[in-house]
Image (cartoon, rainbow, N blue to C red; front, side, top):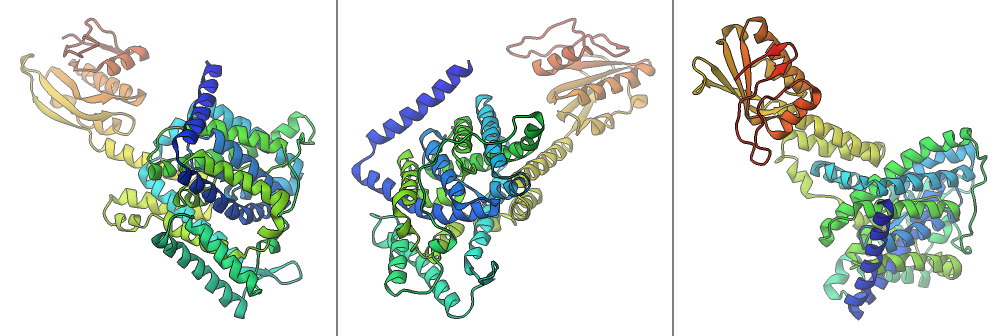
Length: 536
C-alpha cells in the first residue's frame, strides 16, 4: 500500500513536470527562467545569513538552499514554491552546533527528513486543513514582520574588531536611497513592461549604478565568499549509539515540525494565489527526501521560504521550471559566478525583500480586526506576536489551540432544551435537546433537568443534537440515575446512527429495536444505562 502511494506521488510529480513543460509557451518559459534567476539572487544572502545564525560556514547554507530547492521544485506538492535554508530552522540549530558540532547537525537533518517523509507516507499533511483562517492571517502577518526585521541586519557593518555596528552618515543615506530606488523600480517596471520580472530589473539597475560609480556600500561579498565546489557525499561522523540518537532526536522532532508547518502554510498561501489545491502530503514527502539528501551532502536542511516563494509567484513563476532554475542558477553562482554575485549591493536585495513584506502582509486584516468576532481578532494578533517573538510552529500551535477552545466554548453555549408535553406518551414530558452534547456542554446539559419537578416519564429527544464523546455518555448516565432514584423512567429518542453506535461501543446502551441505518427513522429505544432500565 505504501509503495503504491509513493509511486503514485512520484508519478504525479513527473507528470506535472512534463505536462507543464509541454503546455506552456516560449514567453512563459522565458518568464519562468528569469523568475528563477531573480529568486536565486535573493537566496544567496539569505542562505549565508542563516548559516551564520546556525553557527556553520556559508557553504553549508548555500548547499542546503541548492539541494532542498531542487528536490522540492521537482517533487513538491505545489509548483512555484521555493524552499531553502530558513531562519526558523537556523535558530533551533544554533544550540546543537554550539554544543555538539556540525556533524551532529548533519545527522539531525537526516533524521528530520526521515520524520517528514514518514509524515508524508501517513498522509499527515491533510491536517493542515485544521488551521483556521485567522491563524493563517496571523501567520502571514507575523512572517512579514520577521522578514522585515531580518533585513534590518543588512544595515549593519563590521567595526573591525569582530563586532557589527549600525550604518551612519553618507553610507546610510546612500543605502536608504538605493533601497528606495529598488522598491520604486519594482513598482514601476510592470507598468512599462512585464517581459522581465520587475525585481530582476531593479537588482540589475541598482547593481549597475553601484558598480559604475563605485559606491562604498555593503555588497554580497562582504558577507562571505560564495565560491565553492560541488557538494560531496558525506556520512555524518557521529558515534552510532543510543546516546547520540537521544541527542539528535529532540532537535529532529522540533525541526521536522517547524519545517512541515512552515512548508504547508506556504503551500496554502501559494495555492490561494495560483488557484491550486491539494498536494500537502506530497509536499511532506518532498521536504523529507530533500532533507535526507541534504544531510548526507553537507547541508543544514531547510523548508519552504515564504519570501522567496512570493518573489517567484509575483515575478510570474507558476511551474516547476522556475524553482528548478533557481536551484541551478544558485549552483552556477557557487561554481562559476561568485565574482559577479559578490558585487551585487545588499541594498538592492533588501529593497526586493521590503516589497515582499508589503505584498505578504495581509493589510485587510487590520480592517477585519474591527469586523470579525473578537475571538478571531485575538487569534490574528496572538499568532502574529508569537511568530515574531518565538517561532512559527509555536505560534500556529497556540493559534489552533485557542481557536479550538473558542469553538468548544461557543458550541457548549448552544446546548439547550425545548420542553413540551409528549404526544405519544400520555403524561410524559419531552426535552428536545438542541446543540452538540460533548465534554464542553455536558455540565450545561445536566443543569437543564430538575428530576423532582418532572413526571414519571421523561423523553430525551436528540433529533437536533449529537452525542459526541465519553463525557456526553457520562452526562446521560448521570441524568438517568437521578430519575431512577426517584422511581422515574427516561426514554431516548432520535439518536443518530453515530450516536447509538457510540453508546453501544461503550457498553452503556442495549437496543431492543434498531432504526434504519440508511434513513435514520425515528424510533424509541429500550435502554439500560448503568443501573437504569427503561421501556418505550
